[in-house]
Image (cartoon, rainbow, N blue to C red; front, side):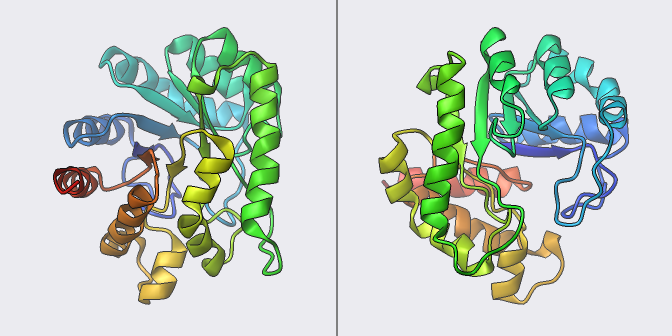
Length: 252
């Protein structure tokens, strides 16, 4: 899953692909480098980001939706707003990547069902808690998400889970999540997506402040995630990850 940020304040790229022309060129590059899915986001969800209105999110998306759909890409929307999700599903998007996993707006599950789409349901904590049993919390929260999805009529084949690396987790908890992937996969019997690309915990352990310089650390995390059962990875640097994955499969 290649990340296509249509935001001026992304933590990782600072809005490099914010302009429509640049966004479309970046989409083509990500696809040519080997992305199977393009995850399009028009609102930054980085820590401390200021939420934007539905109107502003739609304004950012409007110029690129038509060309992206026409290009034949497999498209995911990184949003939690029902109005935005309804809008892009009607335009031809295939996947809803909801950072609140249907828990904030359960009606999104009905939209996904009505359009025959798929969903990525993420675990999310508002605040970090050192004392939290993060694996159990993920089980509890995502079980609720899955229940909402199934009650709306979605099949398990339409659902992927995301433990939410970096979303309300301590640095150590992020490591625990990766190490616990086999347990989580066994518990849910569903595919898992891992999105650790360029995130702060990698910078912490490697003492690297600039997100773009965290590629090698990201590759290490995602390599181990695949080894422990990750079915998808959400990344900024598609070519590097594509090559890493191909060589890993050659060695199996």
